[in-house]
Image (tube, rainbow, N blue to C red; front, side, top):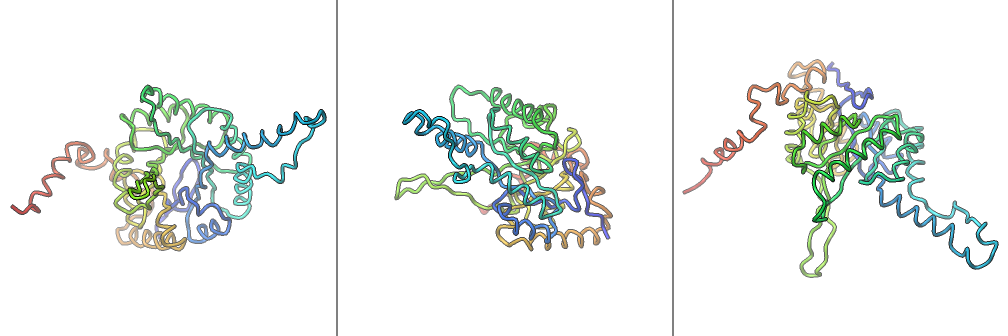
Length: 335
């Protein structure tokens, strides 16, 4: 029987299939189902910087309101149990998950600034999280903000987080950096233990009848695998960092491609949301069957075997293959 085990962020995992950040992690029972279906770890849904800032302001309001109405009011503190301080619920959920399942639980923070909110990273560690994934999504709309300034802010954030925590830190990236390999290298030097490629962004749509901007988040398909697959294949073996592929992992073959490109793990959310937790068991069974059929003895044997540095035609991952791809359409044209 093939050995499906792998390592990611220093964690020993029974297989390379990880449930990525999604609403599935909001309920303990659902995480239990994911564990029963075979996933090797779960990344929790993200705690957003905006939530922490908002709740902190709300708490400050409740603590100080009415203090001018009478002299003794400044000493009055409300019953905090009546107020929902959202981040605390997140920390409590970490504790519940850790006491309910055996697989690693990876906390997730979504933010961009190096402020007091990053102290929650330490609280996540104290609550029992096995690792932390930081999603540094920021949409730069300011005309005066340069790419260098933005990248430096991200690097500083990683440095600040590493000062707060001792558990492993993964950085979830977007594919839109001008020089991705160089930026990835800076993050690794700043202390990142893992890189997660790539974040799938919310892209608003327009309702042209109601004249409104409409929230729209589409689930992925296997075709979305190609972008992270390409960059993991390029980065593998060039940086001392673990790599996670996310977006487009729907089948066993998607997992295989991710590992062959060089990923330590393949993360899936859309497939599990669409088809239920049992989809994980199906993917893992197909993975094992495929490895037996093609005589692979372990995931480690497979990993990186189709990375850029391992394939016979490394240029296939770069611009040189662009013309070849275009020529493949020539015979389809009808003149």
